[in-house]
Amino acid sequence: MAASIIGGLINSGRDAAGIRVSDPVIESHARLKALGDVRCSTDNMTAVDGSDIIVLAVKPQVMAEAAASISDYVRPARPLIISIAAGIPVSALQRWLGEDTPIVRCMPNTPALIGEGAAALFGDNRVSTAHKAAAEEILRAAGTALWVDQESQLDAVTALSGSGPAYYFHLMEVMTEIGVELGLSRQQSSELTLQTARGAAAMACSSDVDVAELRRRVTSPGGTTEAALKAMADADFSGLMRSALTAARDRSLSLADEWSAD
Image 1 (cartoon, one colour):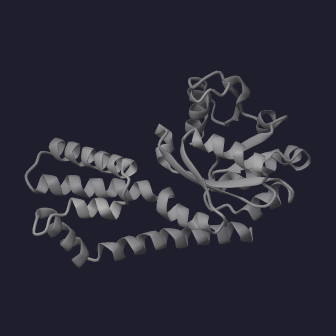
Image 2 (cartoon, rainbow, N blue to C red):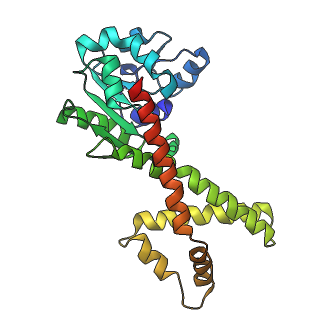
Image 3 (tube, helix red, strand yellow):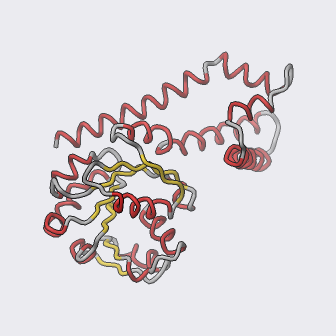
């Protein structure tokens, strides 16, 4: 995810030499330098020293350790912190980095790796208008970025767009398998499934009507599409998706509770 943001920033005209990265895995440095002339280090303090903006792109499990390693710089300097770690609340980050530190939490998703990400951002009253503009510019380098008014809404974002790509991947996986069962070759079924997904998404994004209307327009009375949609309704497809997203939201809530208690 860090590499996708760095690549997006460089592609949008940001000077690579002004980007510093700390990664303990030396092998990752060559991959990051292939994006541009970024400065790589294995020492977190070396990377953050003098920085106005710090992006914490680490796993939730190591966030406390990463935060502790830069706390001596962050507490007096109070740079803008942008965290993309799922489930780590602002309160935990402020406990580790200082109560007055401006912190933006964001929930991106994996299509950011190809510049097609969807990210939601939250900042409390310590985050200024200038901070918000800077954070949004960074996240928009990897796709779409929008703000939510309450931190709790990030749990819904996690369920919808954070985990969402996996739902579509699974749907495409299932459709491909069923296409084979119905008589197509695996290559034919896969190619048709992927292009159908691509085309439907492109239509939805470019249309001046909502997806419900698009669905109605391709559903002829008594036709094949209507038969398929009726089978989905009979199986309570909407209820299944509601259960899935609610389960993801609830897991996000429980993770936040665990980190808040630490």
